[in-house]
Amino acid sequence: MKEKVKNVIGLQIFSNEIRAVQVTSASDKLKVSAYGSARLPEGTVMGGIIAKPEVFMSYLRELLTKFKFTSRKIILSISNQGLIVRYANFPKVSEDKQRNVIMLQAQNYIPIPLTELELAYCISDEHIRDEAGNPVKEPTISALLVAAKRDMLYNMVDTIQDKKYGSYVVEDIVPTVTTIASVVQRSAPFNTYMVMNANNDVINILIISGGKITLARSVQIDSTLSDELNRSERIEPDKLSELIEIIKNEFWSSVNYYRISNGEEVEALYLSSQVTELFSARPELAADLGVEVEIFTMAPYIVAASEFPVEKYAACICAALG
Image 1 (cartoon, rainbow, N blue to C red):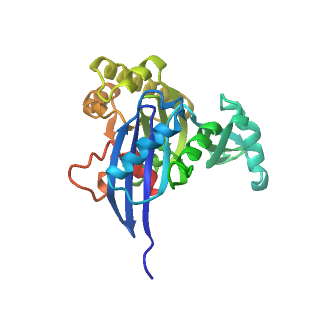
Image 2 (image 1 turned 120 degrees about the vertical axis):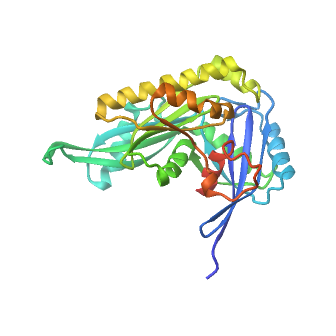
Image 3 (image 1 turned 180 degrees about the horizontal axis):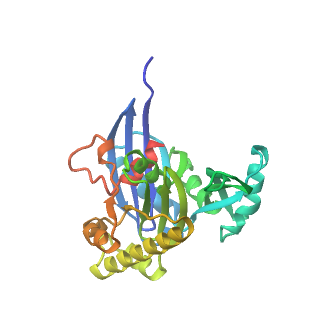
């Protein structure tokens, strides 16, 4: 029987840039067949919304044509202020009542009205016994909540799929941080570690222990710094230092909370970012944080030209993997 060949585009949309990678795969092989990026004029994307659809699509079409993309199927990787990732606990109920309970209580964990969001969840654990192995009085379940602003999702999908701009199809929308975490889990030698995705607008954080997500946070970057980072492809040293300090602070905030809640230490940080200058800061981060710091890469999983900047496009590849 002939193997099904995958041929899709992983696409990231930032307020200042778009990045795309076409991944072709058959069986266990994964090949980068096209890639490229384009800087967007200021005001094209604002707050996760494509404010100027015609301008955005002209740049996307030009990018896909210039770099010889052949697929029309797109998977969006989302990491902006319109995406909220949370880890939450709920009463354990029968499976047929589970969704209702989560939907009713999710608002306690999310700062935006659920009526404005598309909400998905994934059960990560259940707690029916205490540390001594005795049944607990009130069993609970833990779940990863992923919420995205409905207007943002519809705006992106409608813009890309509008036939007057081109005949593209959005096959799926995935959170950047969870797709990165799923790849990290394949080879991470640590029991408890953090996955952090940091870009110019937001930082998303997951802590994984024993193969299960045990903490999730989304942190908005200060608008003044975000605006500065988004204005130029190159980051000034003082702004890079400011971003590094934010990463350190959010690492410690998450680790300290996790230590109090779970009594465990975080052994490593896997860092992914569109800010490529952060990669040179790895030794400084490792020394200051006192843990192993790894810059997330998809290099072991792909076949690509030697000049392919794998770190820059790692999240796009993760999205294309689906």
